[in-house]
Length: 253
Image (cartoon, rainbow, N blue to C red; front, side, top):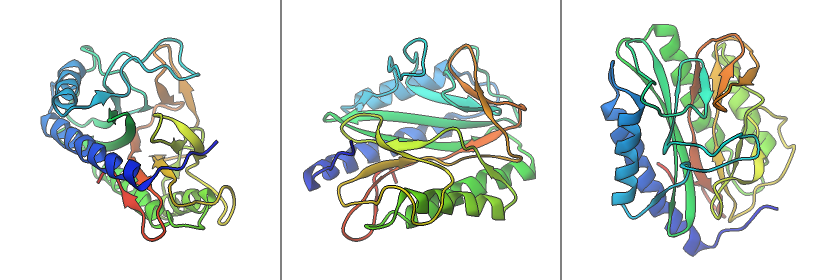
């Protein structure tokens, strides 16, 4: 069931979204060769708590997971697409890329967002992948209007990536959010225009394109991380969006 958020709910989500955006930006400033995941995770945990919010990922257990998630951040390096554990043994090296994915609860309402950043010197083609993935999210947000469909969103993502000779990861999806971290509907990173659920005012969705150089499947490892089957790097961006009668609200901008 898709839930409807009131105007009051959306105002609260906007505050939570600003806190989350600041969290991601502050963590990204700490990214450098040699830093470890636990250092970044401790910073994020404290920053969120200091802003009257609760980390949403920490100890969260989705249906596909064998154990609750152990960190505040999902730090997904290189071939890890999503759900990377922010541990002491995760060391970022020059030339890596890393997705910083985080969710929080502010006044019992949830927002979710992600960015991908470069560690030191990253090659040109990988930077192009990151830029195209970020741009595909912007193309998707343009489709977040009353009467448009989830198929329109997915089509916008896939079309932009393919235009730039990159490929969407199709097994992993975005989702509704707000009253819970993960809600209906699922938001695919590909689709047919006009197909699927129609967007209505009050819907809040987290759109998260994930992309690679070549079409690939993903596999789940022993830590419940999703990695590319052929070990190529992946980029990932995400915003939480509120659908209104007019233009969409990017809650996590």
